[in-house]
Image (cartoon, rainbow, N blue to C red):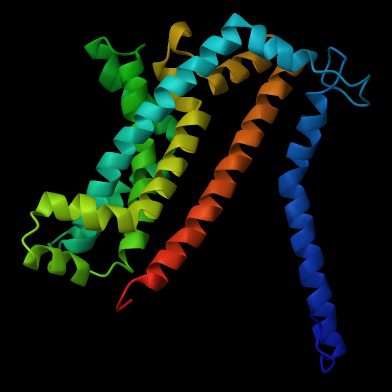
Length: 276
């Protein structure tokens, strides 16, 4: 809101900043706004102007054996990779947050390094590791590497949640005779659940959207939805790809709304903790 005491320069800066933010937002959203209408085009080409409204490409997506197989593969790989990333990422975050040892910063850096290392390097290294083992074209290799890519997100979100965790609750449970495992599942885990779930959603989105590693490790039978889209762009450019992209956009929006809800819930739980 503009203050009546703002100088002309301050007013100019106020409006300029908002115009700049609007242009940046438009630049980020414009590709989405372009692809969504094309998925409803009745024509056979990805061009404007649209020739008419039709759901034929969504029908083609759900009736195609190739697209359904790729979607099924994504729904096999992504949940399994998310589960692994959630378990190992949560345990790593707890150990790194509570533990004090020499080289802790180095270990933390190594654990989150998949976020900064180029994915193509991870893909090449994974192929060179799994191919000699006969696992080059397998679900196992895909799940493991996708989990590696998702672990850093879980570590970061859970570590952030643990920063506001009241460890007096753990001590109180221990003083009442609760074993460590019971304390973890009955006290610690419910309080850090928003961070765990947020990290799991990030890991799921990363796995579901990953194409580079999949190009190195997946055969035709393990092709995921992003790889099928990539192959379709190179071999047979069809509006079905726009329909698949629109479905992914809707799924991403749903994930973002879920993350925002979890963030709000985490803040409420943090402020509700005694002594927080």
